[in-house]
Length: 271
Image 1 (spheres, helix red, strand yellow):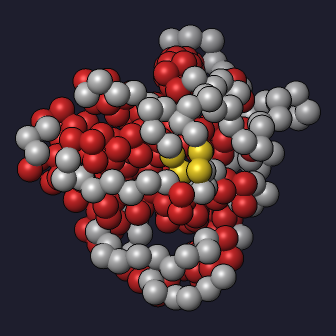
Image 2 (tube, helix red, strand yellow):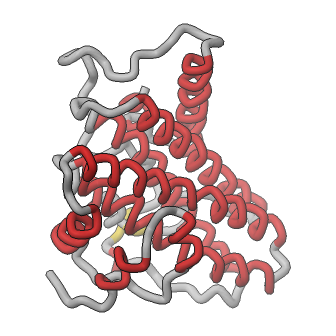
């Protein structure tokens, strides 16, 4: 199911498939349908692609080449919604990818429950952003987008602990820092549909960061390793930029990220 989502290009089709598979997964877990295998038999699982299928649009550019638009105009706010839609579509693939790519790592059933649920919620988030864009006579793919978002997945393709450290515990945690400001932009503009959609995303992203922290700590416990030391080492190795304050300390704590995990990584100059 994960590989089928990853190899579907169209955003709306990808997220519809994602939500259908999530519903089937949880129906099986609850006993209302035929149970699904938690880990496919060795050698039988299809190999996930290194990069997920993508639609022809948006055109993907280097970060420095993506035009900057201020949120003070309707066009700028539409560009912001488009950027969030792009992030959410990448997140759908990231959550299915962690299931498919690391199926060889023995993990409890709850690991799969968490990431299927996260993928389902990210699919909802993408569709919320698409609905907002279409209400503004736009659509996902109307603007250019950031090409570097899948880099973290490629860099951590061989290391589950690194994937958990970099994707939910760094990249998604960053969303907890910046989303309140985005909500305020749309509140001031009296864009109530965008405020409602972003508020839903903000509330549910806490859980995704928490899943990352939970399973990262689980793996550290399995190896009898200090989670903070391991986290700092992996982020310094796989994430090229310093973490940027201000941080949303309250929501990060709610998601299981203590201050001493991320503040020591703020402002460090590294390759």
